[in-house]
Image (tube, rainbow, N blue to C red):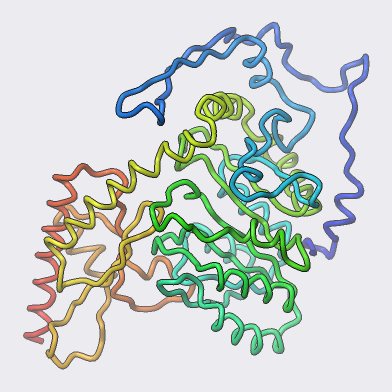
Length: 423
């Protein structure tokens, strides 16, 4: 585990000390007596009392004082930590060599985690297609990006083994794997068997796994959901190779900017140093509000809050896909997340056209002109290519607008097919 300039994570961590309080104040900190908000009351949805159940929350002055001050620890509020989710969802208990740090959303945490683990020019294995937001981070480090294909069962671990066998003979740089759990854009999940093989490969080839999972509770697949990397590594011969990223943006509010990372303590301490240098601390006021909501909901309420809502949204979108794009596109209904990933069939069967076509121009021009907003599949690949795939979100639009958008997209595909046939 290296940082730029060859400094090790362990050496940075060992030099870090948390200052203790004294009778003389060393810092210029706002006195709590001047905080303008002395109490706050708000209503929250009650997930266990649908459809319109609400509960009233009240933050007292003591809670607001904590949320408005600067804590001594950069990582997070001692009372909040990870809200107990890692033990509840993944069976990971304290004392196993891991800890938690909180930041301004999971994107903030991923950026700091990548910079704690990688030097410029290092190798990163990326599941393809992948969330486009992480590619900017890897490009900034001038990382050597190696694509690992995915299919309906998630990451192709056998392909990863081949890439590592060939690639690691050609380079001595560090390597990490970015492995999103709820694949954005595809919505598929990786099976337990493949995850276990990836964990074995991480030990064999000495790399870390970045488990990117902002959609943790947005799961509507089979009830026997595959365990996460963070949970599976607990029973492996060696632990400490998984750095997990969670977010409350998809379950509570993106505007709160609360995300957290869980993983090996030396890595997270380096991330804390990064936070201290760049933005001093994660937003404590947001943490107080989030903790109040989660404490009221409990774990069952937390998982129930969004899953059924987005399952219904997905089903509405799926029905409209069947009505308008059957025979014009291919897709697998997503098991999680907020997106449909589908392949446009831009040439008629038996037309003799070998190429599958490219969605880039169609989506960015013709579809936009018809009022249909989606993203072409090329956006989600690390290396440039032509692809007929498209990502569309089902999270926001009401049923009538979903139906109209897919009807218009049908017209676009039919026009392209007709033009291709003439050409």
